[in-house]
Image 1: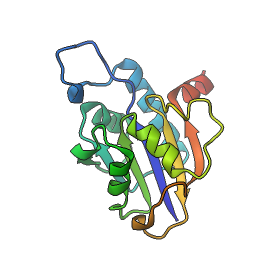
Image 2: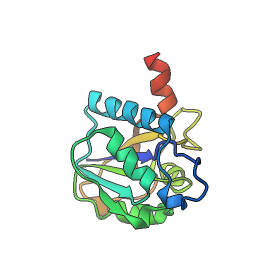
Image 3: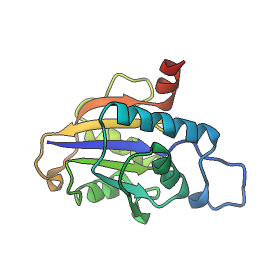
Length: 166
């Protein structure tokens, strides 16, 4: 069995309009959300063994704020990637538990493409910033990954975590 942790980068800053999109950092809310997600992942023993991360600054900073062990594989092809490109990257994975950190609309479309049944969460369709999907696949190798084959373990947003923490 394989497990995928699919994560959209946390909330980014639009303060400096002169920055290229790829160079936008996280804002304060994004950093707080990513820290909460990291705490949740550690508390629930959901630790990836391999991480594919878009090369954009906001995805890199999201990874850093998670405070998980290991180093991500930074990939420029994940910057605003299509679901097909993301599937191709996932099919190169070798670990049992893999994380992918990327952007919308690709992340939302990939999530909808890979799960057999969508979770009953009002925000699954739009996959807001900092959203996290964990799905299990009954495959031995990532090369066998196909659409609509994942079983949702959980889907949550930073709002879910921050609401329950209050």
